[in-house]
Length: 248
Image 1 (cartoon, rainbow, N blue to C red):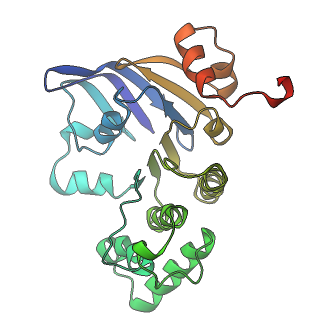
Image 2: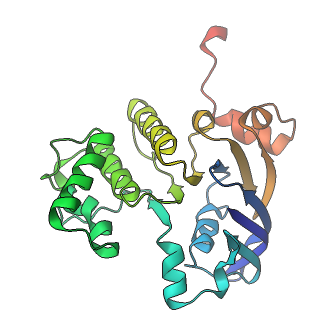
């Protein structure tokens, strides 16, 4: 579904991506991990054509993203869902209006059909009854749930998650992870999940890729990443792992 081939990108004279190659199969969920400032979000932007590579190629379902323009690029973007780090809800809209926004922009559904779809998605993320509230009136966890419902309402083929649980307490983090997992079971999207919640996110992904200094350091299953003897991988992963209480 997604093929990244020898991708290079410099910003302000700094080499951010230095020959990234990665393949994500249809229906697979990948975790993209690595130190802050390592180019993870820049990589996501290339997938939807918000950035164009200096060298290399990004293909989505066989299409070279950098070659697309106008309506062809918009058609590709319509296949994506995106969960932003901060949720990116419109503050002037209610939760209902936020979730309905993609349907009103992309479809010709009538008002009753839109309402049915929105209320269904809000129920799936545990927000029944919150549809008339504004973002300022709900918690951080509820904002993430609303943003997830907005992303899922168009049944995306590909989901990009950019730090979906940053700043939330551990209980809410687990709840959001459970929601992402249940949404994948329901829609079977192809996903890339950027997160520092290591190794917590390993339970909901098929594979993990670590981006380090602009290049892929390792790709493998969660178990392979956890057992890696590469000192860079080991230090990053295990520095973030919670202490083993059985040893204390």
